[in-house]
Length: 236
Ligand SMILES: Nc1ncnc2c1ncn2[C@@H]1O[C@H](COP(=O)(O)OP(=O)(O)OP(=O)(O)O)[C@@H](O)[C@H]1O
Image (cartoon, rainbow, N blue to C red; front, top):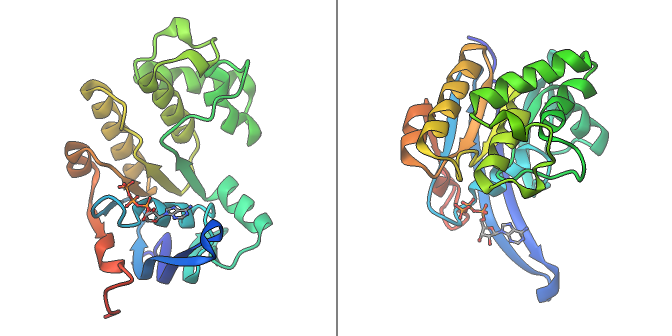
């Protein structure tokens, strides 16, 4: 069997509240799970259970307080939990993609260029990258007259679709999805579900947070229940 794309073990997160006399807030303890190529796993559990915190640790936005996050990278294994900033940037460039909930709007840059940028940054031909960006925006039903405009004034759902197109345009072997469908209507949610299925067929390992039950059921091959990683539970 193929080695997992990512394996977390003994993973923990404790926040230190510096503005509150350094109080420690343990959120995750002894989390263990693997992500496999060609499958989509979904983080489950109630609000505040730590789903976003796990996703942010896997992208290196939050440091891990304990444990390992072993990522298949350049044919070898890299522990993201102890990796330095250069390695984390390299992992993000080549191996781990991330679709956040909100678009980071760059002033004066049009939607089409925002979507094409990750391909251009990786050396793709500009016209080809724009063509691919246009295909994705059309698929996500973003009206063509918006493509040249900076998304600052777009609606929440329009911005989210630009963000999804930007996150899906590359071929990262691992793709993390933080509620990518939260502001979308049913038709566009279905488009995203199809896009996830295509990524799976292409062999990508996906991990997502989806509050929408229909999207979750359609996308998930496995649910990782984060309540099992609560610090109040004794480690099994
Ligand atoms: N940067 C931070 N500093 C301090 N506490 C934090 C920080 N980020 C998250 N937390 C705390 O960690 C706990 C888990 O938060 P997290 O956002 O990971 O939960 P979640 O399961 O994703 O919730 P939701 O479904 O509501 O988005 C919460 O109690 C939250 O207050």
